[in-house]
Length: 114
Length: 112
Image 1: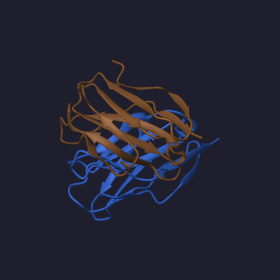
Image 2 (image 1 turned 90 degrees about the horizontal axis):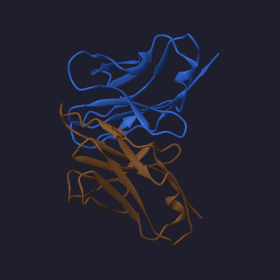
Image 3 (image 1 turned 90 degrees about the vertical axis):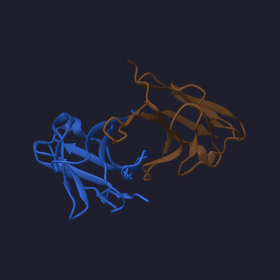
Image 4 (image 1 turned 60 degrees about the vertical axis):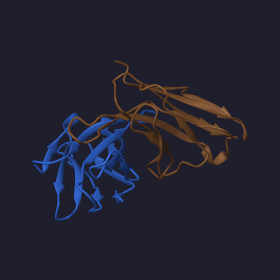
């Protein structure tokens, strides 16, 4: 199993450009998440999904959109990138066999907006 | 809402010595507590979790954590640190829900 994969690994955008980050998981997990990681701030939840066709806002959703058309994929879109969106983005998936919703993380995408 | 505090930005310890990385959680819902480790330029890796049961939880790579309800703490420990343990450590809590709330992370540096 590949687990959770993210595409691309690195990207540089100019202000105002758009892009989509792809997350894929092969563990048949219902729940998927997008986080951003910034120095000294830990991981902050952007959007999440509790199942195919559903999405919900997290702690810092502004400037981002998501879609979950297939169970195994969770896409994060930036419609008009801003320098404040320079960050490392992590995708995660989880299940709830024991009620804990333990999360499995992808390797991250490092995004720079100039 | 859940909140998790990691009071130390950095912990330095000599190789072979015991290490402790501190974490406290807010009392809101049922604490489902986790520790994750992040090596440079990598994603987060699961170390251990507490749901219920024994207060001492054993995890990967020789790490363990002690759940203390009266002190609302979930400190990560290892009896003998290795240089290879140097990494960024995150404590997190779901509060019984389906979302994780993370602490701000503690950088562990193990020196020879």
